[in-house]
Image 1 (cartoon, helix red, strand yellow):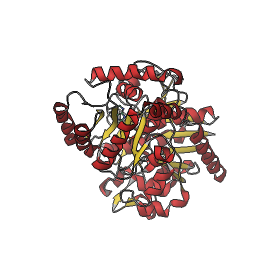
Image 2 (cartoon, rainbow, N blue to C red):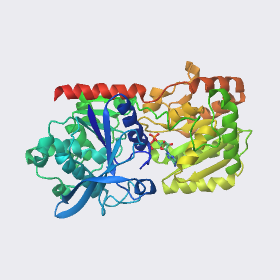
Image 3 (cartoon, rainbow, N blue to C red):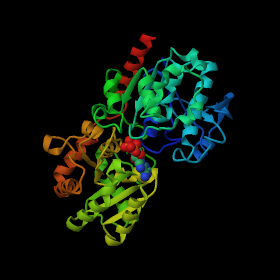
Image 4 (cartoon, helix red, strand yellow):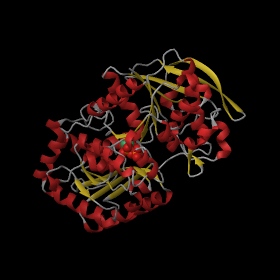
Length: 471
Ligand code: ADP
């Protein structure tokens, strides 16, 4: 069995959020289960990618309407990833420092997908399955099944995994010329709401659709940013498979990014050293419980509520709060302003910092996830692995992975996204922290929970096998 994953992110080469973590780790676990797994991403202009040793395996020219773009497919020589990585080098569109948020993202994503398929037409080894991730590669199932040029790839089953249905990549019909020739009777497969919608096209055209948790799969039928009807209709070919985490990268015993490594037997002293570093660096009080938030500062994550949550909590509770994230500029500046108001109990690092995120997992006492939408959520899984207690809203993958202490579980859960509910949960956290015996007992249990890819990778393999049989 050979599977090709097509994605815009793959840790450690390119990561913006959970997509990068998933595509950087699932293939490793699949390979270990004898499923040969290749990953293809754009060749970005960043240090990690520029330092790679690669060989060119294909050169071609793709067309976006009347514009031609030369590209090369590069194969990494390093075996360090645990799977084979390919990169699409395209100077004008893909060789950029960031992954997303350019004005020509549509052109960039379409070009990437066309380059992948142009290469597959002549590649030495063809995959048994093409596994696409999110809307950026959502056109591939359509292209493979409909475009005349790619007819020879038509029998390869395609899977689309939805990591986040909020983002769909819509563009207007003025760009239909980017799609190579196909039978226009089937143009409806591209369409949603009078636009070309790559996520919708992927859902309609893929052989199977997966989402990153079972609860999110159910929720999408009622709340999917306009695609609810489509997802309900396509439900028979959809399945929710919970994300896992990479137990090698995320292991407090060996993690090179934390201040002090630790394992179950020295968890208290190990975590204390990391907390001390955080408290010193961010001017916080080591004796108070430390509540942290790590993530994109966007509405979906409940980030708009953070300023008020910080205010309420720190006015009334004996606690520290530390935030790491970037996103909405209004939220960013409100979070910055709060530093003056609570100089010894609150701090925020506005930006992206992988190392700091690891130290926070290793040193904070609680992790806040007041999400409105959470397809799976990886942060709570890292929190459990590192021994800090998640405080989550019961939604999506958070509902599937965190059980409240009052239900014999190990986390603190609330149902609504509002300041009061989150405040109440923080208050419960402070009470739990003050009962160190109970806190430590829970901590001892949570680090034993196995959320590695071991289980979920097997489910993907079953899915691949079932599709291979249908070929
Ligand atoms: P998302 O919706 O952003 O994909 P996930 O919970 O699935 O959310 O994954 C988020 C991943 O990104 C985690 O590995 C988290 O630690 C990381 N992350 C998010 N924001 C930051 C940041 N500002 N700095 C470092 N890591 C971050």
